[in-house]
Image (cartoon, each protein chain N blue to C red):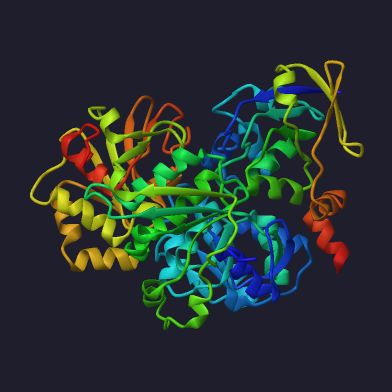
Length: 157
Length: 413
């Protein structure tokens, strides 16, 4: 079980990690500033295994891979949104962080609720209810299964 | 079945007809890596175990976000990218020439029909010459540097047809802002915006760049114009059947069609803090402004500077207001210097900076503080983009920006 951190629609990559922190040499140095402008407590309260649940168009804006990377580095198990911006979506899969489309979950849960995710079955359990997740395209599932693009490319060679 | 522009570009590259939803692996003509992402991309390239770059002549490194360096650690990015270029034989490096998205077509790299990827979301700009171009993350870019290819899903296309003559105070910036307002910030996610109609046929390539550039603000994967004679002249190539063949078929299939009558369009702004929060300038007129920014890969070209100079000639900007002008490239800077545009802007009281991303990415001079208002010609008004998260950013055309600088309050040109 993990705790839910809830966000609204059109969360952009500047809000996930602002551009002034991109000059830090490592993701670990950046991660304490995650969601700083939206929720200054996020980085200090999120625990490994917790979830980010959002409305439409999560991760819009810049191509910065640092956005999914700081979430992964903080231990966020998956981001579940009604829809994702395309670059954020690809970047997440490439670094091996699950991004899951669910049209229903956002309305059915509140911040601080607990949920569970069965990635293999594609089922989310929260507040005693089950929610089906949308499947990834086969090519993306393959990359995610191998733990991201680096592992995937190393395997091909 | 007829094909859209983007289906033709991708189909030509993979050697067979494609349709939306197909997953195909495409060969890459151009890779653009900018200074922010270079160190991360290089690290991933090494982790992947590659020993050579697939084709060093197809890779372009551009330093623009951090130039000139304003933070202690910025120059590390230049040093690491320089060392990578040395080691792998990359010769296309632009260290002080301007913004990556201006240079990729201006310096003669991307041509009609090409496929390009860049480590920045505004890579979509190159759609202005009839190319497929989109932004990716640095891990994916590292993969291309090693392999020369990338898998993509063939996008559906939304046709945006604009007919007629634009009113004198309406620019291509107002057109694309209006389109984004109608589509919303996610209305074109995973899709292509294909622009056509007599209005865009009559536009300069520079004006088209503004529209391609902002396609991503509606979530689009690319924003494309079929190449015409103007495109080819800009690219320094002859217009042949090859370019003509990239035009959409009459029976091409679109997920959606938007029609605009150019005569009905008005000057608009994107109000804080969402790009799709579009209002006519007349609705927010009178709002007091602390700073105006004219520049960026959206609107930092010669015609943009000239449009502002035409309004500011012989006048001085409002005394309490700062106006920052950042040409998109050295070529633009020199041209604006040669034709007297920069002199007019300087006389009017503008701060003219070196070419680069500057204030658009919250760097360079001009950072704002709580409750200050900026009218800017760039592409994003996200919270915290130009200083604190309480700065109010209005996105506008160069004409609206210049008129606003003159009066000190948001003013229709």
